[in-house]
Image 1 (cartoon, one colour):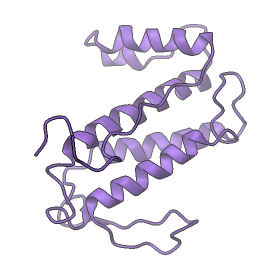
Image 2 (image 1 turned 60 degrees about the vertical axis):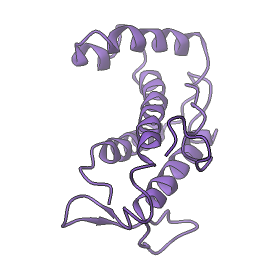
Image 3 (image 1 turned 90 degrees about the vertical axis):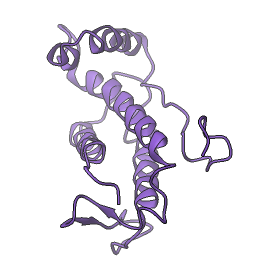
Image 4 (image 1 turned 120 degrees about the horizontal axis):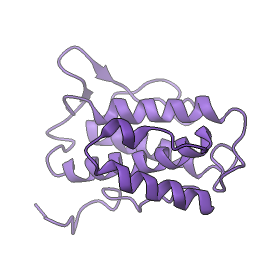
Length: 164
């Protein structure tokens, strides 16, 4: 067991993703940092006055991805393929992986493999310029449902009661 992850799989801790660039992105990031530690969660997630909802969602989606990634990076020593052979949510629910492209039919995988597949899939979408532009103000019309889906998946993943 390693305190800082030395000798572990390189996918354990991914590089921190950057929010879309632009001066507004930096301003929104400062607002998130200032309000998140305030103890008032409602204020931390509220759209700042005069800001674009899509830009706010873009910055927060990347931040949420980074937070979930960090959370799961800390659990990898305790949930291995041997100790968590399936991805479950309690005794009644088992998650199977399919991305619809490379893996079309859902397959059973260990909890760590499921999380790896899921984080790779979301990261691939966040890195896709046509889906998630890296400059604020250039978000496509189909963007809001896309980001809503990613946030829902990350929220569900971050609140699962049992990894395996």
